[in-house]
Image (cartoon, rainbow over the protein chains, first blue to last red):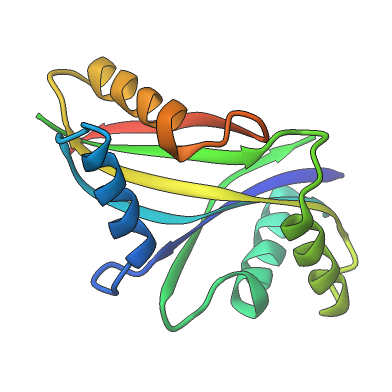
Amino acid sequence: MTFRVAVHVLPRRGILDPQGKAVCGALHSLGFAQVADVHVGRHIVIETTAESAAAASASVTAMCHKLLANPVTEDFSIASVEST
Amino acid sequence: MTFRVAVHVLPRRGILDPQGKAVCGALHSLGFAQVADVHVGRHIVIETTAESAAAASASVTAMCHKLLANPVTEDFSIASVEST
C-alpha cells in the first residue's frame, strides 16, 4: 500500500529561531502589528509504500531521526498518515 | 483573543522541487528504498491576536499573499487555527 505521510519539523522551543524573528519583523513592517511571534519550520510530505499506516509512520519516524530533523535543535511530529 | 495559526506552504505540484528531490535521493542512500517521492515546504506558526478565529484566519491569509508564500511557485493552506 502507498501512504502519504506529512511531517512537521520545528525549531525547539527556547532555541533561537532567526528565520521566525525575521518573518515577524517583516510582517510588522507590512502593517501586521497584531503578530506576536512567528516560528518557521519545515513541512515535509513523503510518499512511501508500507504494509500498514503504523509501519509507514514508524519508517518515517526513523527517517526523521536519521536525516530529516536535527536532534539537537529541532522537534518533529508526524502530522498525518493517509492512504493514497 | 490570541490565536496560534499554522500555515503550510508547499511547492506547487508540477513545479520542480529540488529540495524534495535531494531529500528523496538522500533517503534512498540511507536505505529507505520504499520512498517514492518527497516534497519539502514550510510549516509556519503565527501567534497573533484577532477578534475571532475567522478573523485570525483571514489576516494570516493576507500575510501569505503578501509575504509568506510565493504566488508564482507555491501553494499555501491554513492548517489549523487554535485559541491560546
